[in-house]
Image 1: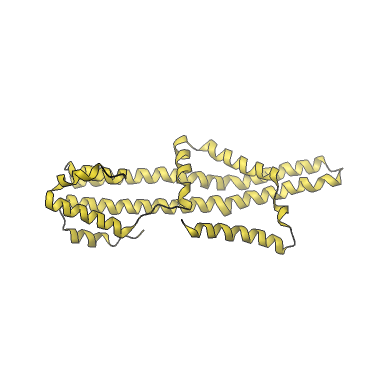
Image 2: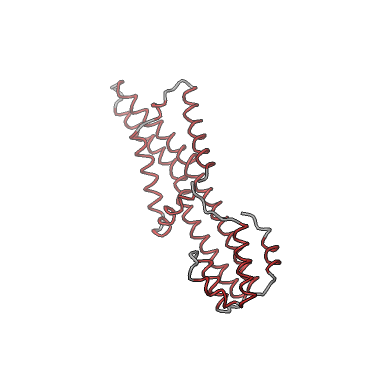
Length: 246
């Protein structure tokens, strides 16, 4: 689990609530259910409206990366590639055929299958690089779902503020009802700006960082598979791949 994510969330909201307390305000003044419904519901609805079904499904799937990011271990991946290289040198590329059935990762499985099929290195690189870019683009669209929420939230917060002010004007002759109406107006704006800058935009940026890490890991695999196809020495392959960092 990524402890830094949890730490960041705690610091952000502790600063918000703590600052309110130091200003003499009570924490319950920041809790307003009508404002929350307007901002969170309106923002989520607008983001869903603009997002294709496949991207929305992927966005809901990769949100777990915020706390449990993809576990890519450079040394273990390089060791695995060197192992494939040793098998290929001893038994030929067909010797890798027995590994394909037990491989769960679709990118690795496809690469090994292309090696066994004797696909030329140039074609392997072209096909697998296309797969990397397509996955990166698809995941990027999923991350944009949260970025779009960060764009809509402040505006929806303003809508909530306007609704609150309408209620204020409607109760202008009843001073005892002005307080709750004003609370909706100001708290809705706070919710909109806070949702965008403390949650949605940071989530989108963190997902993009993990997407970049995934692409780097796949490129490491790609270079390793191409090196095996070209018959490079396992030690040279290991030295070549050791420069990757993710």
